[in-house]
Image (cartoon, rainbow, N blue to C red; front, side):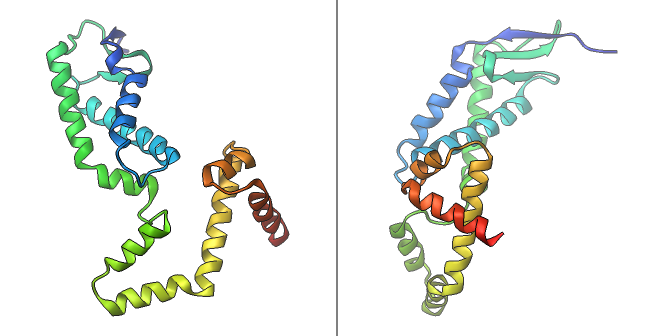
Length: 189
């Protein structure tokens, strides 16, 4: 037996645009994030928020961000405005509690600026470990590995639909540098 579903509007404040705007405002204070990083994090946090909200809604109900609505079995009551505020507050609290995990999964754990890298290296308390990691990063093998990973990432971004110019803009490099990397990859394959 199939269940008939009904969509009930819950207000624009629960739609994609408003929720994404709120998340971008939340992320705006983090100077370590680029605009691209903020967009990635907003998408990841919004996805996590959706999962958390759906877990807190009555069984069979889901939050429809695109339409600012709840999809629920026909005839089932939906949470009132106060209950919705409580559900979203609890869901956001759960997402905030997982922020570091979401950030790690979305952006990885490596620094993205030389200052941040230096800070991370200086934060290693043991001088021998700090020297070992610093030496590894300075080795020619590390340079080759990093260059290969960077090339793979650039190629993946272009296959995903970004133009070489868009990639260059997002990375803050010139188009000639991206073209050189891509030519080198073609020669190597």
